[in-house]
Picture 1: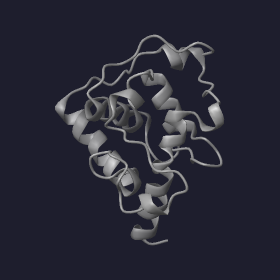
Picture 2: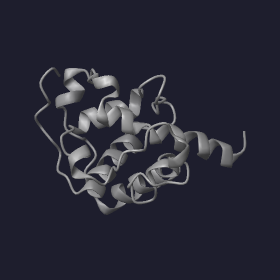
Picture 3: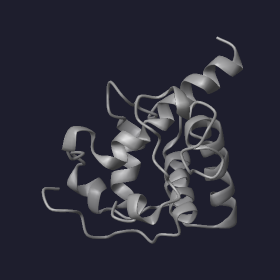
Length: 146
C-alpha cells in the first residue's frame, strides 16, 4: 500500500473521532475507571504539542482539516460531517482518559483502533494537542454512567 493510500485510510479513520467524541447512537464509551479518571502522564510542552500536531496531521487532518474544524479534503465523502475538534463544547466535557481510550481502542466498525499505529506517548500527545486546539483544560469529572 503506498503512503498516499495509507494516509487516506488513516485520515478517514481519524475523522470518525466524531463518533467517539459525540457518542454513536447515544452510547457512552465504556472506559476502564483507572483510564477514565487517570491524568495524562505526558506533560504539555512545546515539544509534546508539536508531536501531537504531527500525529493529528498524519492521522486526522484528512477529514478534520489542519485546524480541526471538520473541513478536511475527505470530509465531504463521509456520511456524517467530522466533528469540529477545535470546539470547546465537543472536547471540553471529555476527560483525557476518554479521549485516549477512544483513540486507542477505536469504535468498531466506524473508527479503527490506533493502539498499534501510535505509541502510548503519541496518543497522549494527541490528547494534549486536542486540548490546545480546543483551548480546553482536562475535565476531571467523568459524566454520569462512567
